[in-house]
Length: 160
Image (tube, rainbow, N blue to C red; front, top):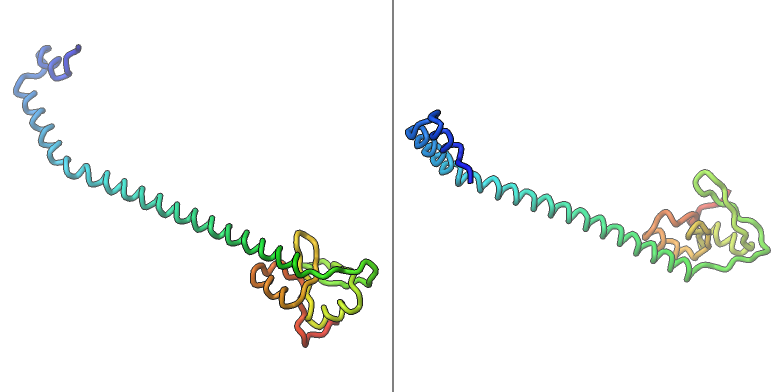
């Protein structure tokens, strides 16, 4: 095996034994001074990485829980609409209502139109379809997903 750099320098005569011993001593002193300090920054760095990882995990868990809660609420809305929707007559008059900047229509009989305008019934949306449900159910739907409620008139509000 090859000689160390120090041995090579001693053999070639570039350095003497006194210089080699002095270099060893300085190296030993430097190692002793840095011994305690070197471990502390590494431990702090590991601790910092663990904290960052824990924060990242908490954020991901929070997002996952929000998504899960949102899916549960949408499932509840879907169930409420499917269980409480009214069957509409095919041969009825159109009932017009606003959706954003557009005007949509549902074909309802005269009785249902009066109940819609009196606030006893409401129009909700489910998968781009419009359904009519009782006002009580519509309020429950609005609590879970306000975007699903399309039309719910207040009892004292008059249609124009």
